[in-house]
Length: 286
Image 1 (tube, rainbow, N blue to C red):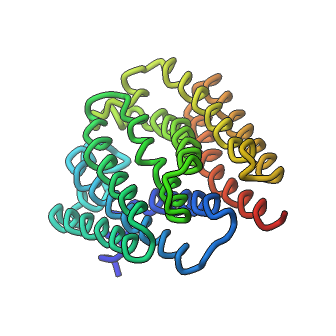
Image 2: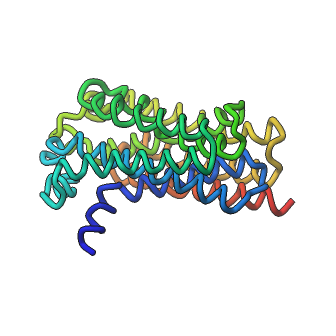
């Protein structure tokens, strides 16, 4: 049982869970509320399993750096619970299993987009963290693609809507991850990560980007209503949730404390599930 738990943790369950939530959100928007159970479940399983594999590969890549950071030194590979070779095999296997599910049960376009997501996350974003602070924006691309994957799974098209939902999540990730980077900036410095909170100690650039991308997130979240893909319930819910995040973002950039960063982080964590709930209500209540 402990072995299973170790591999479960290696897969970064929190991130994998969020990937599946955002993929479900994209699927529901793309399907316009018409969901076929087996196809929906296959889509989420394929995307989620591939995401778990990518997370394991990220852990494998950063295993030596993780030893230097307090928040990561007890992860499965640095702590010796899982051997690096086993983690590498597990990560690759999970990615290919997820892709296989998508090819066989969903569609090739979704599988291609999921493969692109994995490659960007593991081979581009992960090493870039040691090079330049722009890694957060680059990492937001594979982080946002699962929502587009959900849309493409439902429609089998790389349509306008797929990129609207991509923009929502791409924007959302900036205040979310900048809050994390501010909370753990000393730890990131220990690991040699070139996060914006590390290279810009006073945080002027970071605070600007938090506000910029929060506004962009609110704008992007209202596009489905503007193009008449969603109704008033969604519009009101998206606006209220967006303003709630904006309030916490403004508080954070005003007081600059880790407590305010944690509050922003919490608001971002509840934002996406609540937006998904609003989407479901909008589809089925009207």
